[in-house]
Image (cartoon, rainbow, N blue to C red):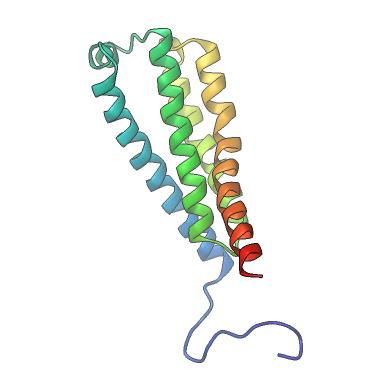
Length: 150
C-alpha cells in the first residue's frame, strides 16, 4: 500500500467501473418506474376524476402538475438509489440522467399532441437535474455521517 491505494481483501475482486455504471443505470431505471407507478396509483386514488381523465389523456391543470410531481419523485428516487448502488462511481448518475432523457424524448414525441408544450418541456428539462438532486441527497447524508463520526 505504498502507493496509497487500498487493496480489496484477499478473494474479493473489485467491480470494474463500467459494470458499476451499467448496474447503477439499470437499478435507477427500475426504481424510476417503481416509484412513478406507486405514486401514480396514489394519484389515481386521491384525485377525483383522474382515472377517467387518464383513460382518455384529458387532464386538468392540477392533474398535469400532479403528473409532473410523479415524474419528479421517480427522478429523485432513481438518482438516490443509483448513487447508492454505485457510490464510488459518480459517472453512473450522469449516465442515468442521460439515459432517462434519451428514453423519454421519443415517449413524449409520441404524446406531443396530447399535452401542452410546457408540460413536455417541464418533464424533459427536469429529468436530469432531479436525478442529480436525488444523488446529491445521498452525498449530503454521507458527508453528514462522516462529519458526525469525527
